Length: 253
Image (cartoon, rainbow, N blue to C red; front, top):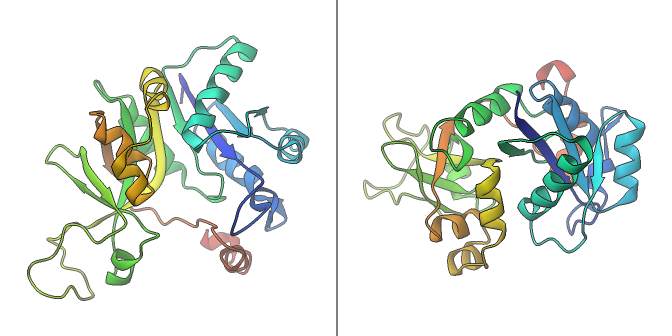
């Protein structure tokens, strides 16, 4: 995908899973597997890290990585610094950036393509991906943010709560097909000018309340274009997730 830089923010420190980017997924460091998946779609892919162990590992496997500050408040801020470093070092210019989560070692190229095509549409400032919820338990899980959209697939709100509220009684499985409840997939694309703008914004009330940084952008009037892509995800948040993926057959991923 030309004119888009894919950036994988990657920190070594983690409350729930220290050193997660370097954890082995079927024998390969997680961040390296993520980079390889992103490279199937984008010609320019870069890991943005604050730790030399991650930098050295990525470079050992032939990937590109840049060192960024340890003081960033989010992966989005890290992306902006990485964009500036990569642009200066490569001499290339980009119209957009895709923020790829480093704990998705088998992220689908289809998801990345869908995000990139959405980002490059006229008038798009920020793009993201959703998928339809398949169970009530997903909707009630506060770790799975939900999204409501307008008729043009622009995000109206993100929440850890079940939204929209279902006034028709108690939701049960299987979810009704005429009720499109969306789960947020943690992928973002930004036009470069929009990335600079959102990184300059102060934390907002909604962001602090829900602990979802995208609410800061909405609260400040930016539009987030949403695309649906129901490809399965295999994110790793905990050591138990890692064990589950390592016990799966590679053909299933």
